[in-house]
Length: 369
Image (cartoon, rainbow, N blue to C red; front, side, top):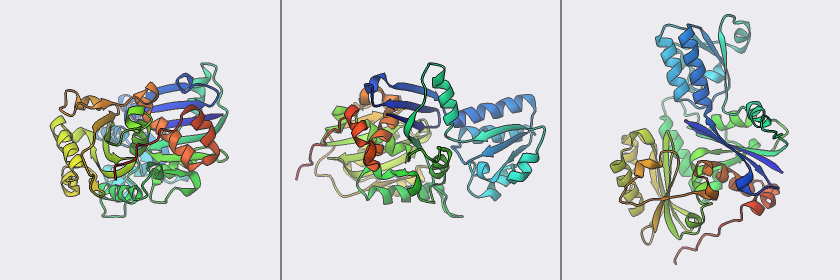
């Protein structure tokens, strides 16, 4: 049985082709440029050649592709976009137009000529299939699981950061990190990027979508030392976002989310200390350009250690916290993919036996009463 897991970040897309007939270490694994980096490169090429561009497709991750589009406009060249593609830059299309992007209908887009057409999407299954085919691997998928970061479609006048963190707080209340994962048909309407990814998967293929941060945290728990700990802070230091959970026997005691680029080592250490003590302030994190913080109850004693995953984990090098670098199944960069697999086993029980045969569940040590 094959299950394709794709963890889409800002810098990379991390891919695991799980095969239930192989040890997980022998499954196909790829670390590739992220979709937003790929689109940004195409935009920069169009800028270098002085070409107008048409962005079409679906909402996807922004960041680098947004900045490249802005550079293209500043250079004096035209950017047109269909409504779904334009929502990559902002859900409110009038704001996108104020950037200088010309919004065109699907019919108008089909009639445009003398433009470089760039397809916007987080999941390019055909490209993945071509890549592995070059090495003699054929895709015969039983399911697909994809993680992306989703701010959600905030109502006009509501901060994207506030809207996202309200969603995180609501979901944490379900007391299971797999609650951040959804079958295709169950994705909330507010999560427009997750819905776009689900729509890009073949309609007859069982599909699970999940937020990247919780996927990485859930994957870090596949490291036996992390997963069996009574109490731990588990932090994913991504290229663009940092998310840290204070866990007690698998239960969430608190968390915070911030932009990695806004964090120095000293600031990150301070927030981690506040998270451990249960004193972290949502208002302080938000005012510091983060998404927010949440404390759920009070832990009876401090966490035993800090476990860290993510491509920016070097931010805590030489930290007084002496972080443990989590290596689930021997591969830190695939933490999100392992989290996706674990969530798939929980949310789609029909795949649980195949996944758990290769990834035996790690029992949490029960919290002290």
